[in-house]
Image (tube, rainbow, N blue to C red; front, side):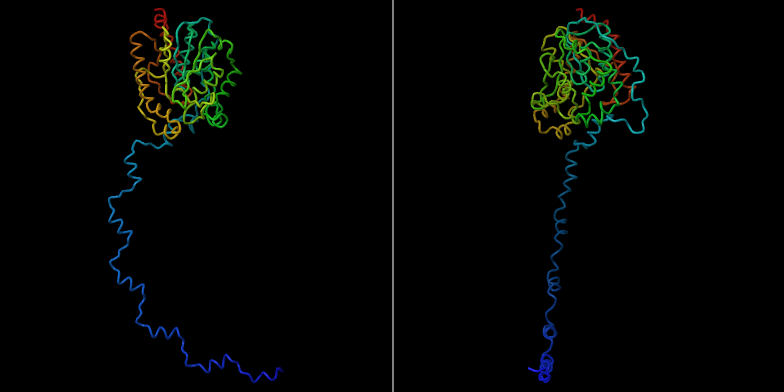
Length: 400
């Protein structure tokens, strides 16, 4: 069809508009026709004024339900802050910021040295643990060696076991020089020991470093004429296990287990069994000496005679760390009470003249990981001189 022929056809949309003017806007018409229909939301509000805010109503209806967190605090006041408690357990591991104190004991050259005699004294020497309170024990042992009192049997726990090694090997002053020289070496005590050996004490570093300057006589230590035992806590059974040189092929590893501090150290595994510090369940292996029926027993304590422990003082921390070892956890619960009973028994046996006890004459006021070198040195000399004073009485007891 030709273009010119289409011009007579009008626009059909415009034509439709002209033809339907009577059709109003249906939306506007609906508004005019339904004025009586109110806003249903507003109507609902007017019709339901009695329905209050359910949250506010619940608060008014349940005033007796307190804050459960606050209630738990009231019901469990004995549960301390475990972080703070752990800090107390690791106090003095690292030097205090801002303190300028000697890193090595200033009078280290005054510590006695030399080899003990080959004399062997019949009887059993029982050594308590106690971390750096063991400096007292080391002073005692050096005094005994100088007096030719080298007991045939030595048994120790934790720091007592560590101190017993050079005593049996006959090296006077060895333990004291090590602790009073390397206390602030982080490879021995502190962050590097934790990083490299997974415990607060670097045992491998300790023996290697000390051996370089002052080697121990291993052959003398292993001499079968003298017995040496250490005690570690079996984490599965919760009982103390006893390791004796000559019978245990890993005696030095057993000593490490005996002195593996809980909470801050990885357990030591011996024959597929995990072990911790012997002091976890037993502080003084006195009953072992009694079972062995030694006629002469000398007990070296690291606390004064009046000391007693607070019962269950670390129950929550124990559970936090060791709830996977229920047998050990149970034994830990009563460890303090057993220790106090043991101290009473030792006092009774000492008074009866059955045993001889060497203990600090005054309360020991140092931390578990004490960093004040002068305090540690003073504790060593306290053990040394107090033992020297007791030598006549000790000889009298041994000669009965």
